[in-house]
Image (cartoon, helix red, strand yellow):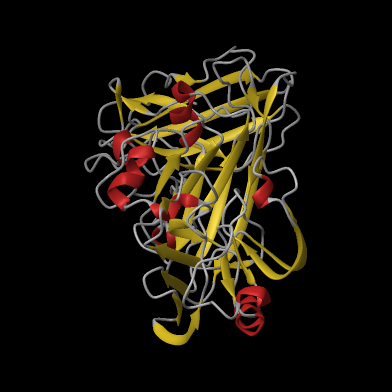
Length: 418
């Protein structure tokens, strides 16, 4: 990854924008205006003849440098600009003449190809800049990418094209093995999220680096479009591995459907677009197996499943039970589900193994209305939700959440990157 620099300084403020990708671009996203470079000319008033063209000056130094070899396929194009100059055009062509599409980062730091470059391929980059006096300068570099590496990290993106999610759906990027701390900033610069309408946001890494969540300070606005690119392919890491592939998805956020459970009353209140639409009794986890307090997100839905806990170290917690209308909240096994065996104590006593028990009728009603990404907040239990036990992005305050970013985050989130 290179940088457009001006007299050795990075154009724009990387600290403000590099932590978060593409947020608040939306309709405000500005693509660079590409113009055909030409020397400026003038006409002599006395003679009527054309005056000499403004000198173009020496070639721009372009990165990757001319003749560079073994460049990662995540390479970005940059140049060292004269004082006051701005980039007017960047072109990148592969051997054989195919043109690579791309966009400028809005901080001016580099030009990013829309997709990974090909392994073992020669490319020619041309950067044209225009100075405040109208003079243009151009630089050209021909470089070759590396061969496909043998050692890569696996990755995942819990977001799918053309799906509609709840307002608490975080963008969840997953890495196997986890990204080492010293590499997270470089990876985060390549994780792009655009929201329409524009909303600020931030990334947060779990402690072992296996997941990173992206969310806004508040739940997404209903109707938001999330456009995500985890541009991991070819990123070199300090452990000798490289990113495996780029992952992309464009998804929608649906209506606001929010569930709130209070252990003091043992009631769940359900809100749709801010209006209370249903109140139902619940039974939470008993004291020996308490439910988690915090804001969780529906991660998975199964109309019928089997809970099998025969491997639990405590014989008292071993059972095999058919379950209906199950909605997963944590990796540790907490669900909302139908529990006809506890209907007689729901609203009065906690008897579950940590799940949110509701009647079969209420479980069906919820199941028919919820989406992946709908939030449920449980309060007043004996256990706090553990970070990383599910999609726990919303269990932290915004001020706590941004501390998990690998790069500095502005007070209200990021500006656009691309």
